[in-house]
Image 1: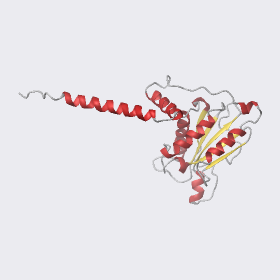
Image 2: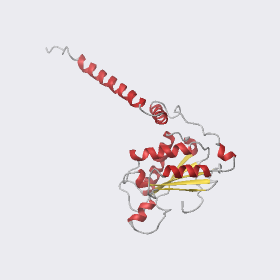
Image 3: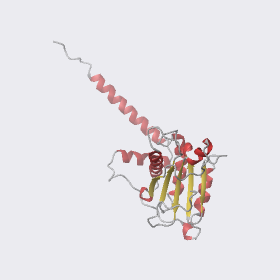
Image 4: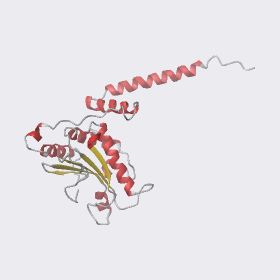
Length: 228
């Protein structure tokens, strides 16, 4: 009869020490984050360990001072154009709008790897900066995904554009934009910026557009023009 191994407890002890080490490394990593990044991480951890109904959902903020002064969304347009300058000498970010609406067009190749629907890590700081500006305003946000007219492996262009829009929505919510303000819309390739059949035209057509309007009725997907 084989006798029990008297050292089996060492396996459990080693597992416990590994978990404890990982726990302290995670605490140290969180300590290195600034307040804004730390809030985003804590919010994400909270959603992982709570049900959807119990997850924290931030309330829309009250209108900020520029709106009361009659400037509408013009200050926001200026701020977003300054954010766009972190990607120098490129047309991958286009900010447009007026006192009543704003549009931020982000080239999909800037946000996603080819055929992917999860925002690449390198693009997260940009979305965080955009979210920091948008979350100060209480108005509806419509995030529109656009694909080009080439087939996507494993996904239809409807699915690709929709999932990319949803991925941007999820990241904006992670960085503090109230999710009840947002809608994700997939438009496939039916609203191209260019109809030319060239690689550069298709690249421009692949994009995600963030559209916000002061119109607070149920027209979340209203666009000011077909060019958006």
